[in-house]
Image 1 (spheres, one colour):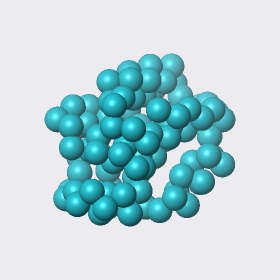
Image 2 (spheres, one colour):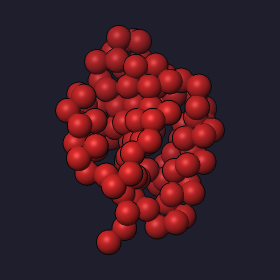
Image 3 (tube, one colour):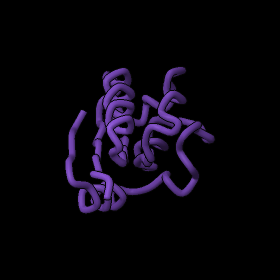
Image 4 (cartoon, one colour):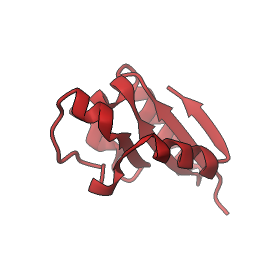
Length: 101
């Protein structure tokens, strides 16, 4: 069974680190889930964000997404992954390892 990595992102400053961590973990056979919240949802507006495709399952806090008046659709994030903090809690329960950016 693959090890599972959960990543919590609340900052809009670390997209390169996020992409790098996800790529390294995926390459090492890990399953990766990411939850974006607070200013982390702003990463979806970066032109590099589509590089996350295939590297991790990405969900985000819809409340923060709407508070920043961002628009859908967002590459990489499925409609059902515009979620609440409950999804964050599910990721914590799901993963073997958890990091915060």
